[in-house]
Image 1 (cartoon, rainbow, N blue to C red):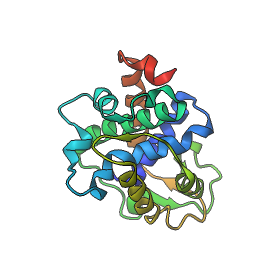
Image 2 (image 1 turned 90 degrees about the horizontal axis):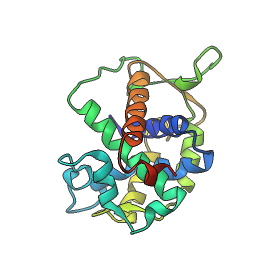
Image 3 (image 1 turned 90 degrees about the vertical axis):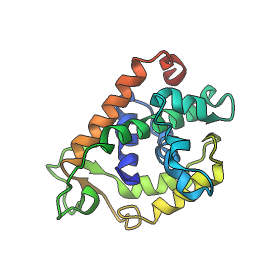
Image 4 (image 1 turned 135 degrees about the vertical axis):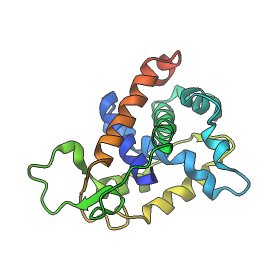
Length: 199
């Protein structure tokens, strides 16, 4: 699963949780945060993905600064980072073959009439929100600067780079991101930490 796919999981997760649009920015940053290790010298994937821990515990134990879960933006950031780990674990052992006509699992949305809303990825809107997003949380041992560098890297990728409109998410990616969001929501609701994350 690539970083744009993680952004879509965050968007679907926010919809499932029925959180307001104001939470989109922190959730988008949380969705990319675990992969910010690539922009932090000396930090490897295991440091941010903690595959020996359950995703919820891994994120909560790495979340900084203390008290981050006391703010709505901090909770949104954390929930989306959990979604990233859930999605990675779900897809890492399987190879999903995206159609050759749809690079990255997307096709240009020249016409969206008749296309289910869940299949439309608002690339321009996500790009704008990601550019402006701010949250005072990060995942130890990362720093906020590493997450910020990852933000600008992803803004340079298709389809965010060419965000002149919407794109359509095609199968099997559409089902995969929906399943990742649903599994994340289910895991959170079934955890001992749900009240800290969803209040």
